[in-house]
Length: 296
Image (cartoon, one colour):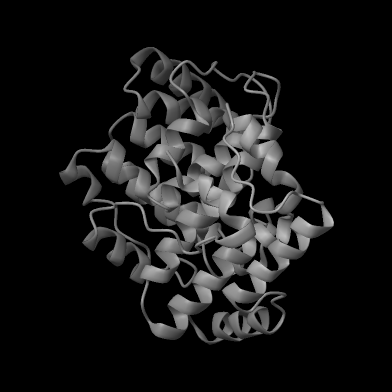
C-alpha cells in the first residue's frame, strides 16, 4: 500500500464496528436471541434455499463483511496472508445462502446478484461454491446489468467447457463492447472475452487497464469501504485465469503493481496451489448450526 492507502486503511480500521472475532460472534449470539432462534439447534435443511432462510435473520450486511475485514486487518498486521485467504473463504460461505435466496435462478435481470459473488468466490479459490452459484443447467442470461449477465454466461461456458455457451457469451461480449460502457465494465467484459478466446496476452493487457481504472470506477463494489484499498473483484478475475487458461497462458497474466491489488495474497495462493482456505471462524455452542455453511 502507498501512503494514501495506508492512511485510508487505518481510518477504516478505526471505524470498524467489530474489531475481533469474539465481538463478531457476540453480535451473532445477540441476533440469535433477538430473533428467538431455538438454542442448541443444529437443523438439517433439505435445500440450499432452506439453509439461507434459516440463517438470514442472523446475518445482516455488516456481520457478513466484517469477517473479511477482520481477515484483511490481521493479514496486514501480521504480514501473513493466510488469515485473509481463510477469511475470504468464510466470508464467501456466509454470503452464499443470502445471495442464493436473492436470486430466482431465472433470466429475470438479476444475474448480477450471482455473478458478482461468483467472482468473489474465485478470489477465495472456492470452486465448490462457484459451481453452486452456477449449476451446469443454469439458463443463458440475456438481460440485466450488462457487465454481469454477459460475464455470467462467459464464466459458465468456461467453467463447464461448454462451447455452445461460450459462443453465445462471446457474441454477447463483442456486441456489448460496441456500446458505451463505463471503462471498468468494458475492461471486465474484454478480459473475460480474452479468456474465452484463450488469448493470454490480450487478457494481460486488459487486466492492467482494468486495475488502472479500478479506483476511479465508482462502482457498487465499494459497498465495503475496505474494497477501496483491496481489489476483491480483480483478485477473483485474476484467479480465473489460473482455472481457465493453460498453465503457460496463466503465467502471462502479470499481477499488476497497483496498491489495491495485494500481490502478497496472490503469491500466497500460488504457494498453496490455489486451494481454498480453512474456516476463519468456528461457530460453537448455540451457533453451532452456522458451521453448515462450510459443507460442500
